[in-house]
Length: 107
Image 1 (cartoon, one colour):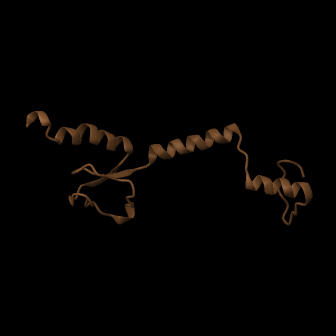
Image 2 (cartoon, one colour):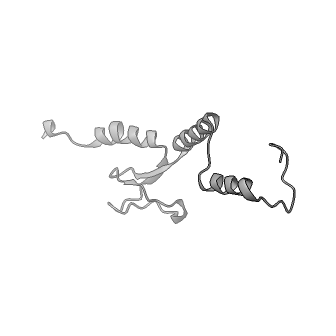
Image 3 (cartoon, rainbow, N blue to C red):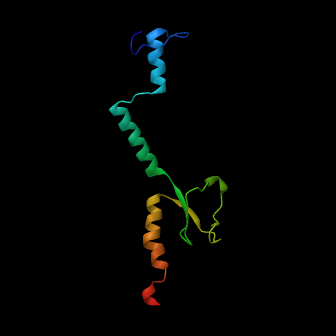
């Protein structure tokens, strides 16, 4: 068989070719270029994923299903659940939510 040639319908591998094909299916190899493509896809997915959190109490929903179509928080009961990127959540917690909390110094 010529590498890169299309497989003919009804092709039956026998002997060493069949053994090598079964071995490849059980333990496929990946080139450095293939690994780079997969790494780029994973990084893109992580950058694009959305998470849900409550703007009232800051609770993050790691198991939140967008099909539920609700904005009521399971923790505090407020209608304040929003969607955003992980960076938006971090900004909200570190800057906005933290600023809304009374500090011990003012007590």
